Length: 109
Image (cartoon, rainbow, N blue to C red; front, side, top):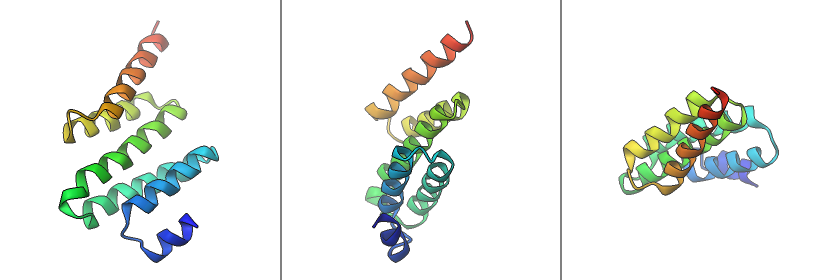
């Protein structure tokens, strides 16, 4: 149903982000990363100004999650930092960034 929604409304970042979430649950991380990347592009280009930052951050948080699953921690850190640059009060991004930094610290020991 979400693939159909994306086909019908290709400029809707929310549908794309939801599809990315489903792909994560299916452990199709390559597809999820592509979907979230497209959601970020769509959010920048088509989301109404009052929703743009929230939809962009949602896409970036999704990308960050996928990067963690792929053990690409530097890229995950970058995504969460971008979210916090948009909204310093983004609790989800802040929590995920702390988690990524703890993983990086553990892996360097």
